[in-house]
Length: 164
Image (cartoon, rainbow, N blue to C red; front, top):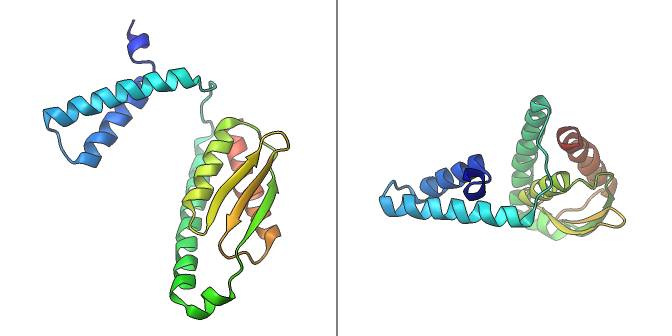
């Protein structure tokens, strides 16, 4: 009975905590809204029928987290220099990069989409599920091969270790 009303109790607790932190309030109304949001959200997740799975290799997750964090910091600096420097802004070449991914695992693809989109100067544009080709847009495209290596070797390989 409890599993029917609360199929993902840890996720519901995280949603409630996030709601209360975002609103910076422990008022009864905010707690009630957070509980309702958590219950409705987990019920909607059940209807999406996510594939079962869990992350393995905590050490690999830590390595990936540090890599992503450093890449986001480095990208923030690079994008800021492009924006603030007139010469750099005029000399930049934006473009699309097509990357052949080996993984089709939904958690790998979802996490990779979050990483790419969270990194300033890049955005996930398209993924062709039949061919496994990912298309990203890069604000300052200097070397396409570097981007392909970055996505496949720096991120996808670690994500495959974690989720597959």
